[in-house]
Image 1 (spheres, rainbow, N blue to C red):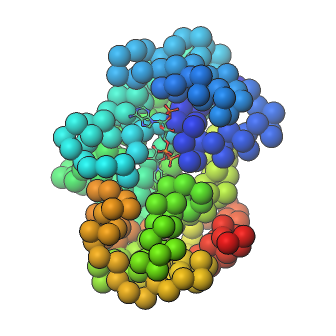
Image 2 (image 1 turned 135 degrees about the vertical axis):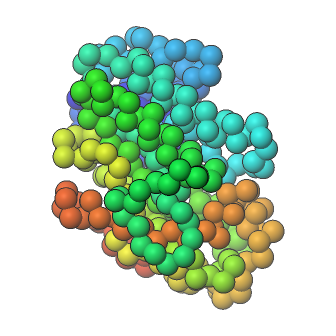
Length: 302
Ligand SMILES: NC(=O)c1ccc[n+]([C@@H]2O[C@H](COP(=O)([O-])OP(=O)(O)OC[C@H]3O[C@@H](n4cnc5c(N)ncnc54)[C@H](OP(=O)(O)O)[C@@H]3O)[C@@H](O)[C@H]2O)c1
């Protein structure tokens, strides 16, 4: 397949490109820095500044599948008004431009989304049947608007899947930022530790993106989280154990903020999410069902 990927130099994108290349697909990527992206990924890369430019036509012209992962990282620095705008626009405006530029050859559009579309409080378990209300907070509105922009492509007869991603565990993202705290013995529960953390191993999220790209049953919103979410207290205990470090004492919020920036507030939210469609409709086979096994896989060499 001829596949165009945005955000390909990121934590998920790099692994995705690596796996797709093994499948002998033709990969092209869009990046803010084409030279760097080409060097990192070893595939043709085109420069694109979504805020000031249309999608370069030579990059998109023959593509059959778009996988859209780009977006300002939530975990870098303070959420000033300008950064909040960038977090929003780098997802929503870029998606709008990709949809507008879609060539006739395109049949599939796979777009990022996140479990942030759910309310983030309490013990209630949510699946894809959740009806998004009209009044939305910042995280919910980003995810909702991102999905709405992507869904516009369906009027061109293009299949669209929005991957509502949980906290991805691997060599990047939140885990990479928490690791120094745990290595210093400063990692532990945050708040009362009862909040739910919807994790997913990097290998599984990459497999879900590939399945969504290639399997025509994947359409609409899809929760991409492991089948066994844990409470934050269990997560820190399991991570401490995997790293052979103590993790009993609560991490003060200001320390967590040093590691995660303003995204630390999200660690206090509670997301109990079920991957209902993956399990019941698509029969997706998770490689990592439970957290200790996932962490042992990531940290066995430590
Ligand atoms: N990792 C997770 O746990 C997680 C959880 C839920 C949802 N997601 C979503 O899944 C997507 C991929 O996640 P990831 O962890 O791989 O992200 P990432 O490592 O932060 O990478 C995102 C990529 O987007 C591009 N980008 C960053 N800031 C940008 C900006 N201001 N304007 C335009 N492009 C920008 C960058 O590519 P270039 O530098 O090459 O342009 C970057 O490599 C993201 O949209 C994220 O929100 C991730």
